[in-house]
Length: 510
Image 1 (cartoon, rainbow, N blue to C red):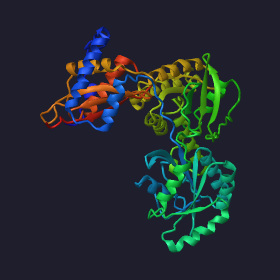
Image 2 (cartoon, rainbow, N blue to C red; image 1 turned 135 degrees about the horizontal axis):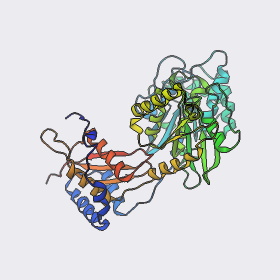
Image 3 (cartoon, rainbow, N blue to C red; image 1 turned 30 degrees about the vertical axis):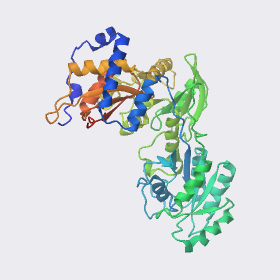
Image 4 (spheres, rainbow, N blue to C red; image 1 turned 180 degrees about the horizontal axis):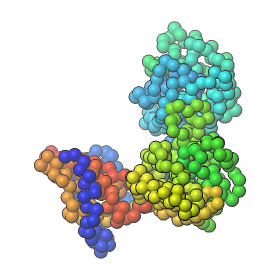
C-alpha cells in the first residue's frame, strides 16, 4: 500500500486519548508493558535489541550524553589525494574524486570507524584555488581545520615533492601543537618509496607512504593514528551542566550578529550591511532572562557550499561544527524577505543534527507600519509559514527586532520550552499504553492482506526523543507520522524533532 496520507485522516477525531492516559494507573501501565516485553522472547532479537531492553530493565531513565567523537582533519593543497584518502578510510565512495585540482563537494564531515574506534573525519577540500593568493588561501583554510580537530593528517603528493604551499601549512602545523601525521600519498609500490623519504625535509617527522587509490599503507597509517587519538574529543567536548549552548543560524545578513550584540548588551561582533561579514563563530556567555547562556554566532550559510571559496567554505564548516556542539538552534529569518530555499535548507540541517529548534522572525519592526505594502507582506508571510514551514510547525516562533531589542525577552521562554522537550522522556508503561489505545482506535491499514502489529514500544533515548517500535511488519510512513503527531498532541514535545524507529521482528521458529 502506498503512503496514503494516513496521518491526516483523523485531524478532527476526538478519541479522548489524553483523558484516557491521564486516568491510567502508572503501576498497571508498567505491569502491562512488562508483559509485552516478556512476550518479545518469542521473537528473533539481535544484540542491539537485547542491549536496549537490558537498559530498560535496569531502569536507566537518566539523560546520557554521548561523549563527542574525536576529530581527524585531512589537510593539504589541491589534488594531492585528500578525497581519495577520505574514501579509503571510510571504505566507501563518499567524497567526489576527480583528476582536477580543487574539485569541490557538499559534504565535509563524515563518521568513520577503525578497529572498533569511532571518530569524525573532516575533509578540508572543497575550495577552488585562486592563482593569485593560493599560499595565503591554503594556509587560512588549514588553520581553521587544525583548530577544529584532535589529530591532523597532512597529505603531500610524494611524486611531486614538497611545494612552497606545503611549507606554508607546515608552519601552522608546528604552531598548533596538535599531533600531525605526514602522509606521503601516491606511493603505489615499493619502488617509489624513496620519493617519500625525501619528505623528511619538511621537519614533521617520519613520512607515512600510502596509496590512497590502491589502499597501500593506509591500514598501517590508521593503526598509528589510533595510538594518539583521544577517546573523547578535546575540541568538541559534550559539556554537561554549565550554560545551555545555543547556535544562532541563518543565511547571510538576516541579523544574527545584531541579535548576539543586543543579547550581550554591547558591540561584540562586526555588523555590516555587506552580507557574510562574519567568518568565525564567536562564543559568548550572555545573561538573558536571569540565566546564563552560551551563544554561538555563526557565519551565514551560503546557497551553494560546493561553489564557495576559501573563507566562506570554512565558515560553513564552522557552522556545522557549532551546530554539533550546540543543544538548541535559533534559526533567524528575515521577515522583510520571502522565505527562501536557503532558509529551509538551514532548518533541515538542524533537523538532521537532532538539535532543538526555535524560529526567530527578525526585522519584525519593519512590518509594524499599517501601510498597504506591509499589510501585504504580513499576509504573504503567514501563507509562506503555513506552506514552507509546515514540517516544523512544532517549533516555537518568536517575532523580534534584533536591532531595537523588541521582544528579545520572549526568546528565553522559547529556548527553555524547546530544551525541556528535547530532554523529555515518556515512561515505558505510559508509552505502551499510548500505543495500545492509539492502535485500538485507529489500527494500521491492511498491507497485502496482513496487518502489522506493534509488539512493544519504548523511548530509547532523549536529545532528541527517540522512540523504538518492535513490530511484526513494516509500518507505512503515513502511520509513523500519525503516531508522531499524536505524541506531540499528548506529550507536547514543542521545539524538538522526534525520531520514530521501527524494528521489524519475526516469530522464532520452534
